[in-house]
Amino acid sequence: MSLNNNWNRDILAKAWHFATIKHSGQTYGGRIPDQYIEYINHLSSVAMESMWVLANSNDDYNADLLLQCALLHDTLEDTPTEYHELLVTFGPDVANGVQSLTKNKTLINDQDQMLDSLQRIQAQPKEIWMVKMADRITNLYHPPYYWDKTKIAAYRSEGQVIYDHLAPADALMAQRLADKIEAYQQFL
Ligand code: NI
Image 1 (tube, protein in one colour):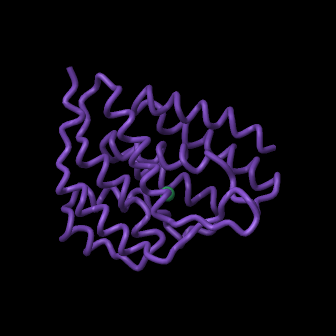
Image 2: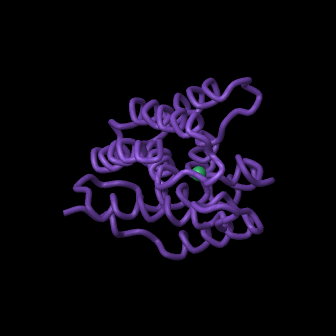
Image 3: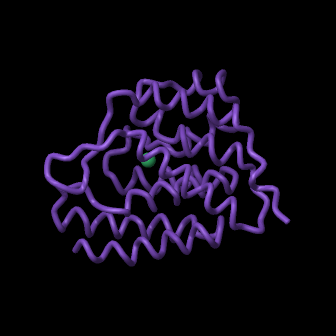
């Protein structure tokens, strides 16, 4: 019997509040023209995908680590938050996990940025690998209305690269990602 539902609600409420403040005012492209979605929708989707795996897996995971990083995973990449603030607020495991999930923008091209991040994720606990898979699962729900077919095809291929690097972390999460990569063909 797994204890994966044994997460601390106060720890998660703190991360959810922090992420909501940091991403305040941000939106991303929706499914129909001129539609924009509140950024925190993405964060809650990543947490939701993670919770489903926690609830259905027989493996024991650090649910607090997984869910905090799910909620905070874009704070370094997409907001003015700095590593030190995550470190003092949430501790080293969360700060290091989020750091690995953050692209190094000094690398020139997108492919190098992705491969560098994937290598740093692989040096982290499996929970961090799972956040990256959950992130891509949610981003494969539907492309933003303004993406063309070339961009959509490239994004699908990149999803396969993520799968190839991170699938060993968890079979349920990996299957969900594989299903979403397959289904993404409908947008091509
Ligand atoms: Ni994300």
